Image (tube, rainbow, N blue to C red; front, side, top):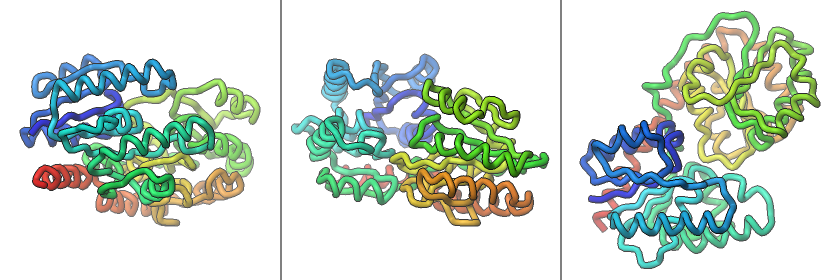
Length: 366
């Protein structure tokens, strides 16, 4: 059986889909991997499978670049002639499924709805048009939460068959339960993009209120700064605080998980299942996250896996951080062990992989 595996780039592949790809190779499927990959990834996989390297320009809104990418995908599909097409994220999901006269089974993974659904306007109308056109041709959709299904039905995007998977799942062998660093005070880690919908703006505004009362708190930001984030940091006087530090995004975040007490991700972004929260819980770190946002609320059990806040609610966020700051190390450890067990049992990456294998085999037999 020939499977065309269309991925964004080596970062998303290595972080979220490596184990799935490795399992498909282990099962002796004929695989073609297509995406924007590094020399290292190409070298690693080329000995076992066919790898097609292409410039995807996934963030581009340029019409001509997008038309060029559609042509590239069509050419790859035609030349490889797969039995099964696996796609992930918005552009591969849409652009690879525009062909009506397909002879293969198509499975699309909705890793999150992204920013296109946030605001009304021409972009949203255009994206919805493309979704409706392309998803007529998708045989099975992998949703990561109930919100994705509701959104598709609300906007009349075709849903032929679907499964709800536990996100990309977390590799519990890699993200192990780490003992707490018994330092004084409480260390909070924010390992996300420095954008408003990820809760960054609210957190920056909350910090001065927290450190005024809890001076031994520490905040670590892990993400690339933007012009907008720098302006906000300056405006709120964060640069003058000694207990706040910023680091660029790193592939290996384990070091930062180890030296933190809580992970903060007050996101109201259109998530799938938050990988940041999965990883932190697997490492035994309680979370502060939104209790009303799909992709985050599924991982929150109030007082057990962490503390919840309403989306973009500064008062809630200040209260939750202060609550965490006065939580004893013993209680944090107890919450961490509970969170680890919770994600290991309910959001294990092996579960996601098994659902994929079962779905592929069932669709092929039809």
